[in-house]
Length: 405
Image (tube, rainbow, N blue to C red; front, side, top):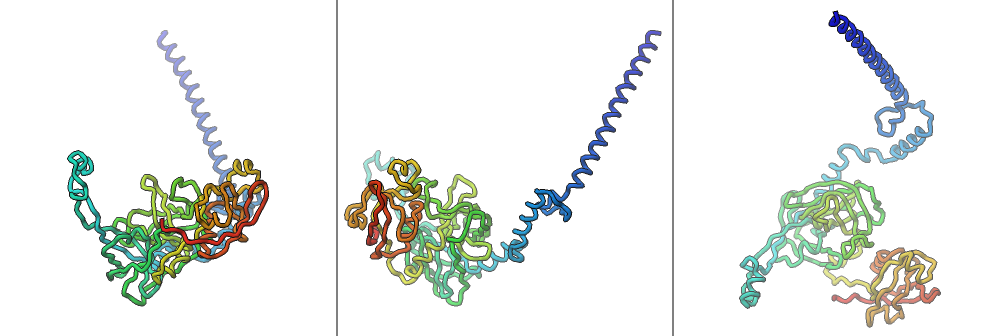
């Protein structure tokens, strides 16, 4: 009897629990349905992603979406069609070349050679031997009569240069001119009626612009990679965070890409791919094409590249230094050292002077001053606005020729 009563009580409890679960499930279904219909009714909020649009929308967020759509609508027709990069790569790729070189290097015939020579007292030059070392790089045709622009480090010291065109033809190359400071060189091949690139304006590019790289990484001919311009005015000397001249891109660049073009979405060359940070990803660097344009005629003609020079070491003006020197401006270049017998010394520049302007250009940082000097020629006169001893003054410097050392 007790067993029957106990069973009835348990059955009653089970029915109550089951009823509670059913009630919770029904309520959940109703809530889910209400949420679904609520978001379906507000589907216009996803218009920015191009999923759903609602022309009757009138909220503040919808107005912002409409503005974004107008910007997109103003882009050129086919600006980023599915084959935009492919079209650019196909068109410009015809002017991109592979460069194979051989150079002679002295190597030790023994492992741990330095230790071996030092331990046994043998002069290393008596034991080293010369070997031919092959290397690969890239370049691009800048004139249809066979002039190729590349990096200086691609062809420096090369005993043999072989240029392979996109159509497979091979030519022996001759170095016409080198610019070691800017890492640029011109190679001439005996060919005519070649496809040539269009040079753009690297002063007009912005971080976020599309970037396309074409080159010969690890011998993989005419490899195309794409990304964006990641940064401008980067430095590869000393602290990379200091201002410099290089373009930073996340378009993949590897060994063998050196000397190849960095191209914008219109197919114009904006940079010459030059360097990478091996331990990083998406950190490649290119020389701005405007730097190459400023010396290319001299390289083609074989003239010696003469660099204009003031003759000072500089550091950027920081807010702390501005406060220390009592200068109102927050940007400029502080003279840290004046080289003896330099144009700067002859003009009267002193350590601690703050250069604020050169000509009509404001010196926002060291890079800006270097660019302005580079755009002039040795022998030109440059008027500098300088802050010294709590007062402004003008100093005229006659630019000299930078010494080779």
